[in-house]
Image 1 (tube, rainbow, N blue to C red):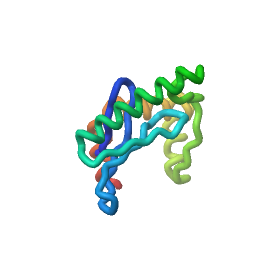
Image 2: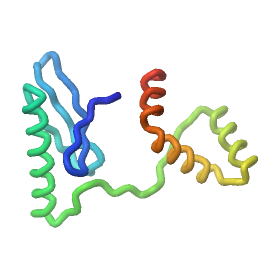
Image 3: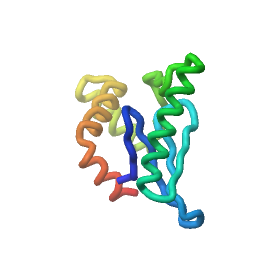
Length: 123
């Protein structure tokens, strides 16, 4: 599982640089680049909270809605045999490929623990 911090509704990925001997992170799911760092876990968490508060305040001052706009559509590239199998499964079950993919994503997200394990095994 990836190292993730959460504060309010914001999440951030966290990494460690052995070369610089510092933890660093990036806020996820926003249109802007907001990063932070710390030399200890405690400092990293504090820096993350400060970065989020600063981001929210900056957005307020600019009259900008914080976060990221999601359109609800995206392109997915998969192997042709997987595409064929998914299309056949959808057709046999009388649903569109779009609805099948939507339900598959919903299912995967409702089974996050199992998905995390599966993703780690296949990484």
